[in-house]
Image 1 (cartoon, rainbow, N blue to C red):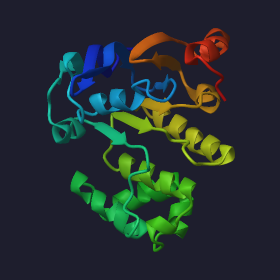
Image 2 (image 1 turned 135 degrees about the horizontal axis):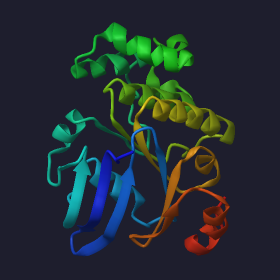
Image 3 (image 1 turned 30 degrees about the horizontal axis):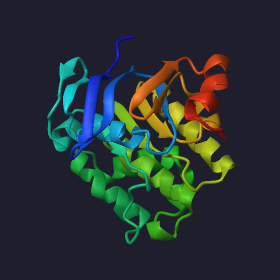
Length: 235
């Protein structure tokens, strides 16, 4: 299957410091690709480049076979690329229902958005009038995912889905991500900790110091090399 999202020889920098050194990465519809690596490797920058939020110095960002390098993030989002940043991306002072209401700019009605959200995450229906900031960390992440799904994305970019969450909740979230991918969405997920995401990923890439050191199927070979690639242990 042809990839829907591609980074071709992408280089990116902050001021004069280059942080990505010729990244080649692709994600196909229905596929979960895990981007792994230690802190400071450039994982979040890669996601920001893929979302059009961070400019590339050279190389190409390709979506649906079209070179979209330099496109405005708003226009890339309209093309079906959805970024859920680290920190969950909800409005903590608004209710769950009002967080969902804000997604009606996508053209869907409030009823349609709530139907999708509450079918995917029934706990949100029970918390509909609750202020988002008072939800548990896992519930806030569910709300962030529900808001993202309201855009009907072709590409879903997830940054540190597991941050601050108990392993049981992380597993439940990744089960939902797997269902989202099965519906034909291309998912690129950044994770510092590899074990859980590799249970669900179809493809994995290890980024170290701004370079892809290894990528392929998340089989025993890749798993066995992770510690050496990270230059330390991985949990």
